[in-house]
Length: 128
Length: 128
DNA sequence: CAAGTGTACTATTCGAACTAGTACACTTAA
DNA sequence: TTAAGTGTACTAGTTCGAATAGTACACTTG
Image (cartoon, rainbow over all chains, first blue to last red; front, side):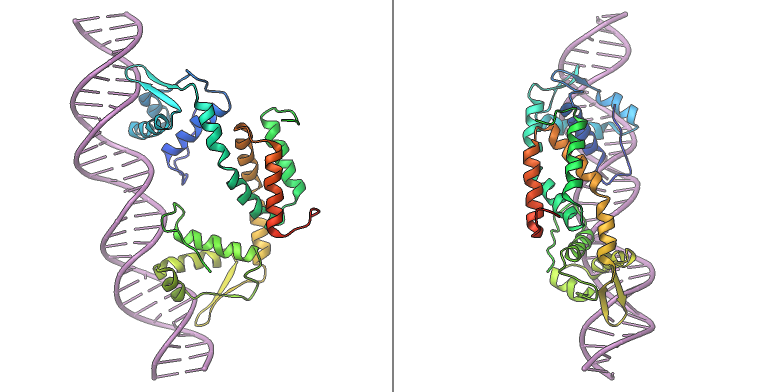
């Protein structure tokens, strides 16, 4: 389920957070879904349990999961809504990246193509 | 000329590299332009000379600047070309970011608006 | 010659990320 | 009840990259 790159500049615990978020956004994890236990995931990924816990604590703090001592961790009801509003704030990043690519000579057509691909990946109609 | 954020996760030397690259892409620095000396920039930014040198060494390695001992550092002839081809490889990043924003509910129209802004910033015509 | 330039090198500090180990309270199922 | 599995909390230590500190050398310009 999870894929971790220990060589990445992005800390492992942030990679875990990102992937849980991605699973929620793509519908793989829905409200009530149980995510792997701290210990089992630490074994599966060969990573220290504390690192997993750090990720889970942060996900809890953000309201994306809730923990039940003795049972496990589960996706909250409004995880999707929280993520959607957070992600929207990255529109500024999009514009910045686009600007840099424009300077490098990337054309409008190429960007449109990217956009079409992005919408295709979601399996969306042309009219969103 | 340079603006450094010591609190940023991005290392200072990488920030300097990025900004030189940006100056080249925007035409502020052209082939033959002299960039600040290691020592003067270290004073201006209140940063250790070694950090500046690390950035300059990397820029040299990438073929964006050339160093003349005793004289200074200058932008190479093909700096722009090198950067353009490098930047083009970030189109994959663009698509990834777009995909994430699509999942978050950002519409095609919003992305088009971003794109228009990016082209506007460069002062470009609609037909690139 | 003096001042300014790039370059090279070693040693050190610093902080984030991560590891290691232990302990406690809770829930579930045999 | 008991054992196994769960989350949680805590301290200590390690590791590594980034950055600092300081020195030294060779070069160019005026």
